[in-house]
Image (tube, rainbow over all chains, first blue to last red; front, side, top):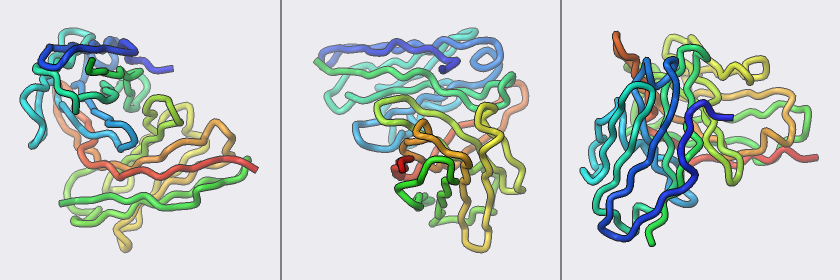
Amino acid sequence: QSVLTQPPSASGTPGQRVTISCSGSSSNIGSNTVNWYQQLPGTAPKLLIYRNNQRPSGVPDRFSGSKSGTSASLAISGLQSEDEADYYCAAWDDSLNGYVFGTGTKVTVL
Amino acid sequence: QVQLQESGPGLVKPSQTLSLTCSVSGGSISGGSYYWSWIRQPAGKGLEWIGRIYTSGSTSYKPSLKSRVTISLDTSKNQFSLRLSSVTAADTAVYYCARGMFGGSAEYYYYMDVWGKGTTVTVSS
């Protein structure tokens, strides 16, 4: 059972904006930074957003992250077919003294 | 560019110990301030952090796995390893190794920026 809650699915048509939420608590998102990982089918996860809103080199600026209180969001603007993947939020949890992942959201491009 | 590669038996019998190795290339495992981590993912399910080891050798483990997990470094081989004892079918998963970045004072940050491709481990008799 994950301590970070995400919607199981999200979808949009090409070009649309999709937002994924990640709900946590004061011991994780409320205290530490949030990261997002993208997992394309059959592949290893890839770091998409780190430290709430930073993009690693090579990640398109269509992807953006934000955090407020004990929640965080990932936005994908200008949705493309290659964005179809599973997305996971994650953060360090001070109470568990461990890293926790969100439940994951499957994004479908209609 | 740092690359990671998992290796180890693909099949482990129940009650035995799962042992995996992560080989690091393109950089020294003891150079720089990184955490070296293990993550797993059962088929069709989400990601689960198992634990991490710092370049100094200090470790952190997921509480529910702590009694069965050992992560160690072998700097001479530029590798780090995972041992998970008393395995059951619930430990069947794809196991990933990853490099972790960390820091921050007011707001701690920790994230995994380089991942291996993963290795499938099945626990079955």
